[in-house]
Length: 288
Image 1: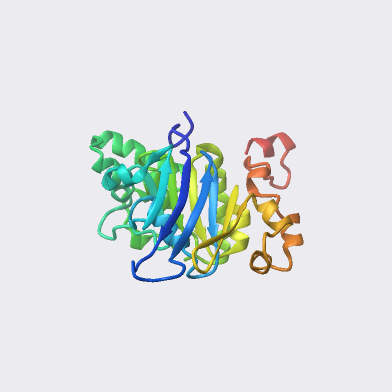
Image 2 (image 1 turned 90 degrees about the horizontal axis):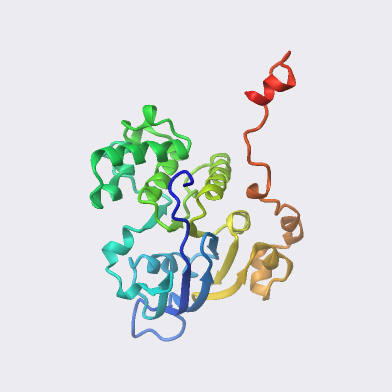
């Protein structure tokens, strides 16, 4: 079993999904006839300008918002027939502001879903410590702290740990790194891609930033205002052959340079870098 659990990912399918917040409105809704399929274990990034329906699409997957028409399937099952409370306990959810309970310690925050699922205290503690370690936080130092005692980057790590607590096959991430500074953001992106190498979850990831979408996504869904899917495919395909003038403008005139920089973190050597001090033998440095 890989660290953090061995369940892996789930398939996700949108079949002609439309969302209108006002049934009387005419023309395009918040999401308009969205169809796409995400294979198990892949990161699919929904990207586009404000008002294009990215977050609405994400929230329909865990039924925080109900579609007006169409179906969403997880592992081939129509989620409209599932109990929404049960569904949400098996879907990880990470948002920009983390949503940590300020009055609860970090360990209690991470264990929220396992506690709701009836796990005993020993199992909750073991899982909490495992996940804090997995996201780079020493359990002995962080388990009993409160969210206010953590930096923004540390709180985001806790948010990811909490979303993974019950080993969900599917994670929803809404601008998860948008509230931290650019340096911390890049570090969190890299760490998350390393984590995904181990866990192979299915992830729907929302961002407005095309550079983040290209870096994070196995698949990228470019959406436009009116909730329409403008293009869906691997990042390299979208950079090489934008499907429309809108996609070309959104991706940017420097898309050729973006293609050259598409050597993503997961394609690099992810082992711990070799460090050395003056006078070290090479073998000593490799062991450090």
